[in-house]
Image (cartoon, rainbow, N blue to C red; front, top):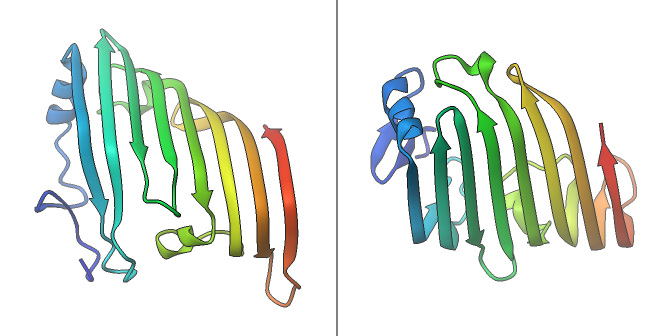
Length: 178
């Protein structure tokens, strides 16, 4: 909503009113799945157009204190080809996030970098470009402990800062880690 209210399926989510009992109940289920769904993101505060993901599949498999999650989806043509998000985490309860650890994986393919600024703030001003990203992140004790990222960018024109000339890249690919 324009006032910053977040809702899912018409249910308003309020900060600080989370009930960990429901999340812990979900983590105790052997498996949950959502197959062939559509998800829409409408950010009225930004005035952005609706972002609709199709062919959304999400799976959660819980084995005692190990939780494996996967989400795959297709984005709108010309904006996002596909997204694949996975997590392999260990933890007992959402009430104690310090004990959680594991790894996240994110793959984004066919991203129109310039189109993204409608929905998220980018660190640079991108006029055009296509990109693919693969990212692995290790988590422990409520922090990111390691990141490895593979990036492939093509036909990019971006301004890296105020007063700087646009940077044009035919292609850039590589791996970054810390």
